View 1 (cartoon, rainbow, N blue to C red):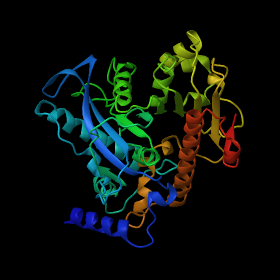
View 2 (view 1 turned 90 degrees about the horizontal axis):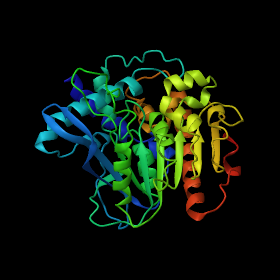
View 3 (view 1 turned 180 degrees about the vertical axis):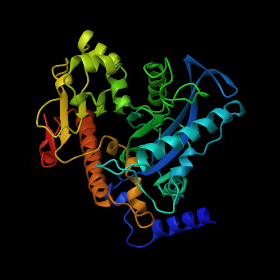
View 4 (view 1 turned 180 degrees about the horizontal axis):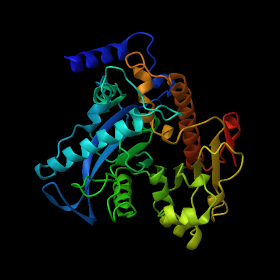
Amino acid sequence: MRYLFSIVLCLFYLHSPGQASFYDYVPLGPYQVGYCDTILFNESIPYSQFGYTGASPMFVQIWHPLEKQSNRSFLHYGDFRKRNVPEQLKFVYSELSAHLDTSFIQYNLSEELSTYETLDFGPYALAEVLNSVKSFETRSSYSKIDKKLNFPVILYHHGSQGLSDENFIMAEYFASRGYIFVSANFHLPYDNKLPFGLEEGVKNDHSAVKVLTAFAKALTNNDKAFYVGHSWGAQAGWCYLYEPGWADAFVSMETTIEFKKDSLEIKDKWPFVYDAVKIQKKTYAIPILMFANTQEDKPFPFFENIGSNDILYVSAKDSFEHDSYNCTYLMRYFFRAQFEQPDTELLKKQIGLYAKHLKMIDAFFHSVLQKEPFDREIFKGDFYIN
């Protein structure tokens, strides 16, 4: 009974007058947003778990512009997790979904911003809070892609233990502005072997992201593709985007290496990035927009002079949490009327900065598409840009 009451109350607050929405902070563009999903298989990595044996499955999510306006019903955040899967993958997907719920709670609902003290939602269990958050009404409508589109494509790679839909607001933002946004899970569940996200031999294999990139490019007649990665996803970009042809620009959202100066520590913790950047001294022949909240007006030491003449080192001047690059980290703010939270003002500031990051990424992509210089002046009030 308490569970049912929490859901009903959540829906009331979500739609009640005066209750701010994410879309008040992140205005969408002229297109409606379509959403669909599919499954790919990565033949390079075998997978044998939960009754399935074969190529590693990739559960893909796609947000895309709808050129024809229509009165479509919006999906709720939890609907992104609902999909039809083949019988042989049902157990795998069920386990994956359970791991994703655990990750969501651990990273997005467990700690206060800044202090990292345990959040207390009073009489509500964390699972109840999660179920309420899943009721968030998005601006995505289910719509299959039945022909090749003609929009540039964005490939998104989540962080370690991350979710493929952790940045659905970013996905909607760009789909509404004329981009196809493609994401997928880069982790799979394993039965009592390793913590989710730390599977042996998979975490630093980049065949999966290449499979996804090839698929994403095949969705469109447009020849432009952009890569956006957060944390581990950004690290993955540095490990393969020196190869020509994969992307026309790269947005690296805080690998965490930007704060480091000790080469031995970097080599020990991030050996693949270290090898690409420092040992092999790879050249990145594409424009790169790097974010990291160092709050310093200078380039990031490890990535300085890396063989690219077209790189921007950007830090917000105000504090911006590592996971604030993901909209799911900020979603609980919009349920503050139901679940009392001590850090709502901090969350609100993070949401404002999240929106400004999206605006800068949009301007960066626009400069690449139009072959124009990036206009940094309009962002200098909120960001250090080198």
